[in-house]
Length: 206
Image 1 (cartoon, rainbow, N blue to C red):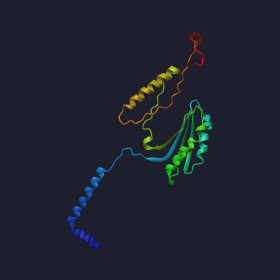
Image 2: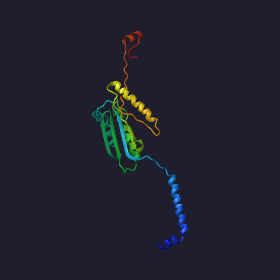
Image 3: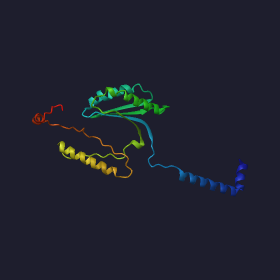
Image 4: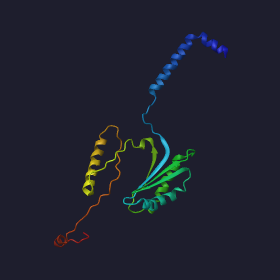
């Protein structure tokens, strides 16, 4: 060890050159290194979202959450299963065991289990959406709109305002997606005039 120290002391020129080369190599590596302000981080969590318009939390639990939960019980590799039954929506947040060896297979098993429950869900419910929770899928800003007055006319104004705000946000550079929640399903009412039907000889079914 002492001989090595004496060698470096005597070879000052070599040591200075070596230090300069290390600094140049480090600087070059730093400049070429990929840097991300918001890197994609995997939280080992999966969400299952099912919309059932017009349903109460109790109906959501019995008709949507319970069938999905029964299928999830057969999946190995899950650490925690949390369910939230709200008005019009059922949400599952699944935490994958951090020691699991094949997490992609677990995610695929979750999708297969959810697909197996589609026939057991109510006809008016939408298809469940299975999504892996990662950093790039998390919303940056949540905007809530309220007001507009009561009744159908007030809701129409509120909906139009939300659509205008959506267009405005999409014009901002860097915005990838804007999601709208809380919309009511549109209904179309057809008023039939019997006199016009008889005059034109058109049946009610036509």
